[in-house]
Image (cartoon, rainbow, N blue to C red; front, side, top):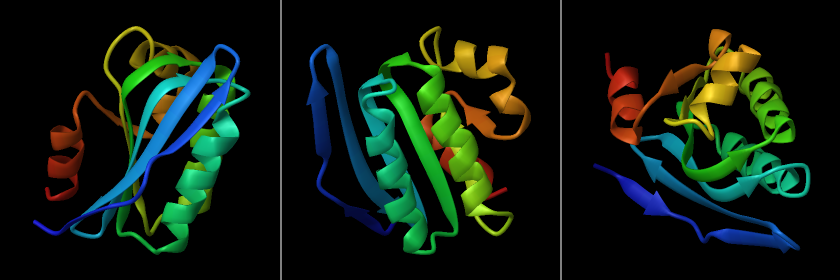
Length: 128
């Protein structure tokens, strides 16, 4: 399995703390996020997703496994990124639990973005 990692970026602003790291597996960009994704840190997520998309991945997975809080600003970034990715890039989100998957389902984002409970399941789904 081809795997490549990029340095994590940390944003810290008062109570908001967010770390974003990019890795690659077989042409798929994985943007792993941890901490809080709110209006102060969502621009950092947007920048990371845009950087990954510029490298022309076959797919992109946003991994929210370690996200403690997901605000509407972060969800807006997901919708915009999905639109930027277009139909040629498989776009999916890893989220499981009340802090991430529940708000994504309530707002209806799962109607446009594929949601998986684990990174392994998200990566396996693109192979089917």
